[in-house]
Amino acid sequence: MDTRNVRRRGRADDLEELMIEDVRDMKPSRSTDSFHWDIWLLMTVQNWVFDFGRPIAALMFPAEWFPMHLPSVGDYFHMLYNLVTPFCILKLFERSHTKTSSTFRNLCVIIFVMGASIHLVGDSINHRLVNLGYKLHLSVRDNPMMQSLQPRGLVDSFVLLYNYDEVIGHLMWYIPFFICLFLYYAGCFLGYGSVERQSQSISWWILTIFSGVYYWYLVTEGQIFVVYFITFIAMLGYMIFKKTKQNSRLDANGLFLLYSFALCFVLVIIWVMYLWNDEALRLKYPGLLYIPEPWSYYTLYIRK
Image 1: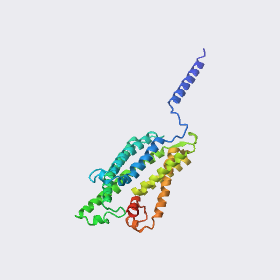
Image 2: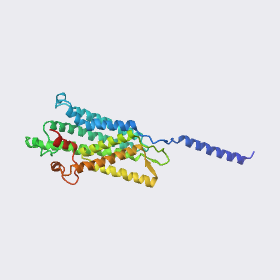
Image 3: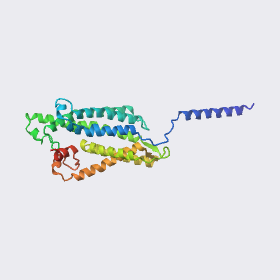
Image 4: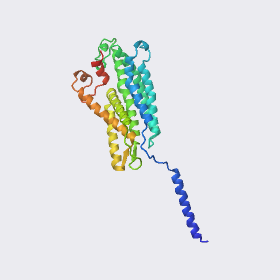
């Protein structure tokens, strides 16, 4: 027997077994560009109901059902939003193609919940003030009910409440929220040959429109255009980088986020152009970065 042939066969067999084991360890690549309908639909619906619909529900339900010293229906909506949104974000991270640091993303979710909870308290009191005649299109000190408030030191307390509601709460709420969306978006890129190209359905486009309109409300009412715009530019820049340097393209989930943000940008521009020469709103929103809040417009022109 030729020992050299045996040795060669042994080496070939070992190499073949090693290749088989490597193939077994590889995760099968996805053959379709799947869209996370369950998560995005839940997130969009709860955004419209629990966030956008929160102040509307507070106005629609009879005041005697929710006394001033107890949480209103809008407060309960806000509580549900604070639960459902982090759940959706965490589920998105679970399905991401790339895994980010669990410590960092959990820290972002914790800060998000803290900021949204701070906003819950401030917004609850703010809507009760509206029912008592508070004007949202005026600053705290310029409101008639604040000018007659005694002692005068109480006005500073309401200014502090406003800062917790509209500044601190919003920044702690939205900065980690947009960071989470960008981190997920960064994992939505796949090679051109790794997935089957699919045209998006009409229902996908409808959901994208609803999502984009909600982000318009979020950016204008939350006064977070700078945070949103930085995120949007980062998304565009990262997409260009991945396409030119790594020959990658967005999957359906990444396109959903990008198109929603793009529609939001167009709607913000239209909104600002429509109210650009409004003298009353200019008093509350001076300067070049002029983006009025929809509810300020409501209390000024619609509510009787």
